[in-house]
Amino acid sequence: MQQKRIRVYLKSIPPKEALLHPDLMEELGINEGDEIELVVTKKKRFNFTAKSSADTPEMQVWVNEEVMKGSGVSSNSIATVRKSTKV
Image 1: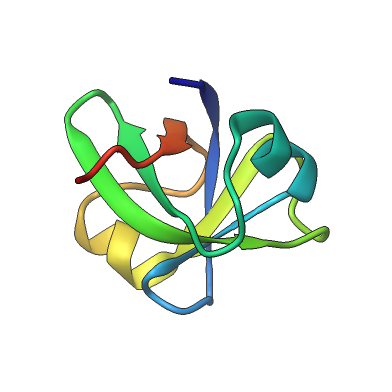
Image 2: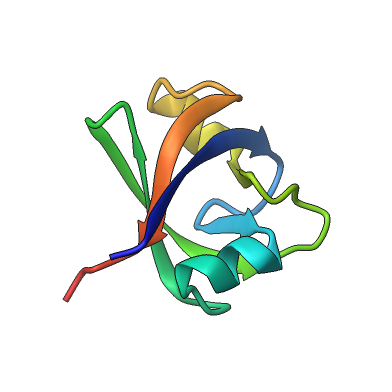
């Protein structure tokens, strides 16, 4: 399973979406619309639908501000991103 540690940034985007750079998605084998998993501090796990965005820097993922703040995650946190293995 391919995964990478990146920075999480909180933005005003739809709650179930995560914006990733196309090169990062290709590196991790993630396609547009795939479900991804973000793991913050080994305890907090979040699932999002991957969306490609060239505006997003390669080592960042942009997610909904309200969802993450409600769970105690702040902008610029380090997280592991990978394709979800849910069955």
